[in-house]
Length: 368
Image 1: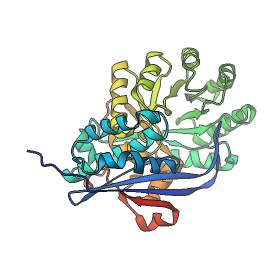
Image 2: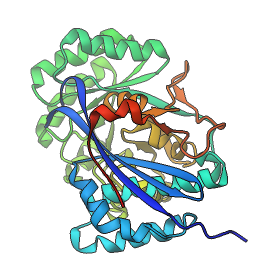
Image 3: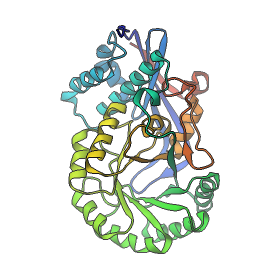
């Protein structure tokens, strides 16, 4: 019979990491990224989870979620997840509440796998040994030389697909797309992400150059709330239309899929209430026969990506890959064939937090 292992301690820490250059996409500019780390202790093991969010997310974990988690059986992850979802009812499910749940839920899954001394991919049940990735960056703030070098380096490393940001200046972006294709050669797939910057007519006008430069993926050409616009573009364009990264719950994903708004759905563990919410989104994709692509945070999505049949590939997002390599031992880099493979010799997520290296970025830390 499974033993009861109560969670004994919960730590929340906040880290702010400057970007390695100013970054912009079609609708936002930023110079740092904030990581919220949750650590849970039980049975002599410590599980870790994290999200990328505002510092207020840490306060929400401390004030609303910690009391539910402390003393809870570390093996009963779904019950804890349902309890957290219920606890934030009056705060609103989209936004920081789901991101707070995400970091805590991931820490619970990691802790459970560590207590069982198995990698998370084995606990969940793998359907594949590796999962393809695409390099993601190409910010609109990059000089042309850096844009070309970043994308070309990813292709040279073995990745067969790369993504760049567009949406600031249509004329400039057409030239940037040309430069990107020049840098990566004829064979690699070229993805673009407008982050919802365009109106429907602007999105169509931008897409006129796509056949010339082989653009095969058009992410958030219009706002992800404009399901009719996404559906119209999906019907008219040869490039695949993708969206979903701002989904925080199953009803959001269900509405997008039912509207036939996307060729590929995106879901983000750090936003959709953790691994538990991500697995629910993956089941929806199975039901609608629509492929799933993970959004950012490659180290968090690796194990789940090997276990969800609908997953097509992971986003190897420049900012988060850099932070995960800095903060965690065991963060896996893509191999020579552009795929990532979990380290089966490491339990849980396979990550060990490098507290000493991360300390200089810490802006808050508490223990519940």
